[in-house]
Length: 360
Image (cartoon, rainbow, N blue to C red; front, side, top):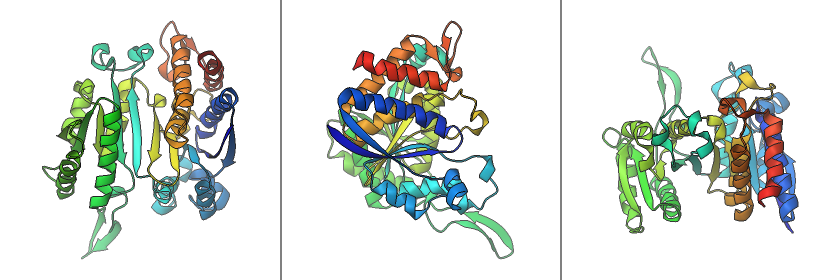
């Protein structure tokens, strides 16, 4: 029997609803594979503000760092919109990523054959796509200093600074090459080297690291072109590696190739503890209605098993269970189409948990 301690952050909006379904599936995995998962519930973001008065208390950071992985729901909502920038829920999200040292965000965008019709793009454009976006997570313009809103010479202005060190670029690029080596052996590095000095530096480091991976085909692409190519010809991509802000935007764009942002998980790895979360956010407009799609959270559990706990077979079992339920025609409202069977959040979780036994 393997034992693991998992920090669970339900969070805000739909977070508690979908995290509950992820835990349901994890418990089924534990039962089938004779593991023991111990859960440590923690608070980050809006729920932490309500409980402690701040978005990331040190007590919660300490609890998370004592665990083997962080299973993360969502943060944010209009309730906290009027707080100062450094006191908003999103400050807690950025802070925990920094505290964990999780510098690499992995965001897969894979189209299920059963959901091709859910995408707004033509089936022949998206059929068979399997893209992994590797986003640098702890550097770049979101963390660079100086930053802020201030007045200078009688003029009010705002400033954010894009900063990357050699070490920050080298480690994320090397990880991306390693992942490409395990997949289709193709890597696209996305930057804005025709305008930004930081991007030219990024491109120089890619060229240097690439010498260690002669078996991986690689190319550079400007971010505006990459955004266009993702909707024009997404099949050309295997692994995309890019900086923090470009990765944030492109991974959301890539998610819509699949038909719903509610389908896609993510993994933030590279530090002491990995963080595993859906990319769709807290969706406060549908919180409490029982219609949120829990599949991204459940797929995040699979990524946690694979990348955080090194339980590859168990991760594959979750993926097979999700695929089976979709093949059976069950759909939450965001991916529903005529002729399918509409289910709510809890029912989808029940179906996938039951399917674990069918595919294990």
